[in-house]
Image (cartoon, rainbow, N blue to C red):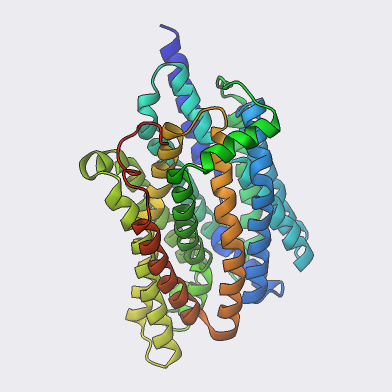
Length: 419
């Protein structure tokens, strides 16, 4: 009978860890921090690409370490590396320092790309309750978004009150570092989950290669690349978009409003994660896999239209608010995608290299997006937000249709292993 309380304690710790995994109080203001130290849109794109490149290079090695040595240590290491990255951005505010800091942030995110979800799944499996995975993953993900959202509001408060000009962006970075260290402390209290038998590195890679040769897994890789790009490009443009729209609506330049806005965005996404099991049960997976990227592409096209109208002298406060409302539309796929894709991988792939496969999917998406990010932000630096957003939306819609029409038959039906 002691097993159930032990599992429930583990689940409570993992939910608490989710709340503090990504407490990014500084994220709504990082673009302004970089800009205040000399970076333009192209430089911002280069810094972001460094983050994705570092994450790309660290993905498979960290996934293999987690598969071989267990998830708990990675849950402690991840927030520690993230704290070091943010501290570098704060203490070394030059182009070189930003590149090093973003590289550390990429490594920290790579550490955490698979272990939390695998630790949850293996903890449930050890107690014969893996059928609860999607429900518990959705709960953890909802708390992760709630914690991130609340940290945004906290960042807005510190940025507003931290100096007379309401621009204490460095203080928000320091707060983020402290919260990351709290997450590492929670991870130390978790119970190490049972591990599947480890393979040597070459055997793990051979196993992963076998999984990736399966048509359904190869299709998932292509889908993930499209969805990831459509999620990340608008997210990195929220602050540049608000800064540009502030010429029409001055409130968009107020840190308290910006922090609150980012908070509300995450609070909108969190319930969608919790509702996911019911949506899947009622409607199935197919329409959700269509909906997520097409909603993102459509919202980007509408944001592009607003920016193009403003550039032509036909902008207005109302249109600027309509563009910002697209941020909220984008929370629909953001709130659903991670739990849905994690469920696909955890239930339908072999256990031995599950974390490595998750990391490999993440690697491929970041490899593609790192190059796209550079191109899009260079286009943005030369021609403005409107053309960059419009191109991303148009190409994203076409790519979605091609990928979804090309999926192997039956891929999104059932929950058994895929061949």
